[in-house]
Image (cartoon, rainbow, N blue to C red; front, side):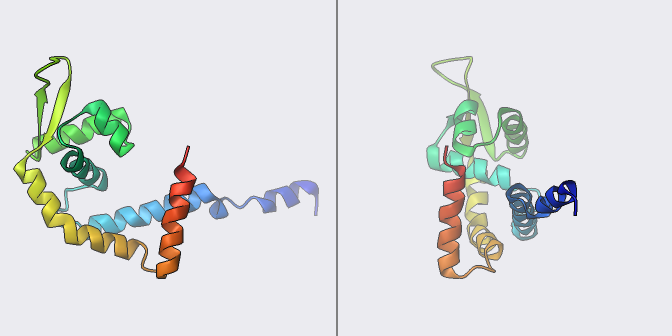
Length: 147
């Protein structure tokens, strides 16, 4: 076997961490869509609604920071949530250049409806892991994303 063939065989893309994480995330997203109480609700929309409930009215930059969703994507999410009347979008009373997103009662009700489904989605995502593996998995994911 030549050196080139040996190097080629030592890198198997389907065994690389990025590929495996992407596949795991795709599986999680599929589970989310199959089990969400609202078929039009995406996981990133749900995260945004939950952040607004937990943190209260927020600017776009605050949502970006709290959700880790990029600016361009969060704008689309805000537009869709506003169109569905799940959030309101208003100018800041103190700074007219700043826009504030607020969870509407309809958005809060959807979060409440999703509570049991969200727990089921998590359970289905990690169903192949025992309780010790689940703790380790969460610990390792947090460690991987540390800066």
